Image (tube, rainbow, N blue to C red; front, side):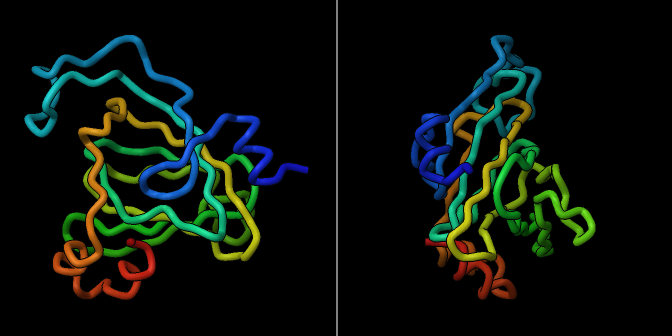
Length: 166
């Protein structure tokens, strides 16, 4: 039986700044030149990147955003609640998991530019997922805002922002 600690050790996962644990598993060798990317990118990016990401019920993945679309793939454990706020301020939530009869999805794409966070509903659980980003992830594209800043942008979502920010 898999446990969070055994998976963290076996997959050599490290703490992620947003919460949870991760390890990059793929970074394409080829790059998209800066000139072919929108002006919001400061340099070239790999075609695509992928990570393992493990979240436990005693923490959460704090609201953050990147420029790129991010595809989440469910692997093992409890379902993840993925919370999103669009640039226009619309809140939505999906569950990523394997209980299809209860509306869970095995894969979901967060559009680039959305603020998003994740947590687990059940105590003493974990979730192992994969995340694929294209153009490839670079920490230059990663924004992890303070609670007050995000609440000033979206005061109507103060409750969920308070729950999923540090």
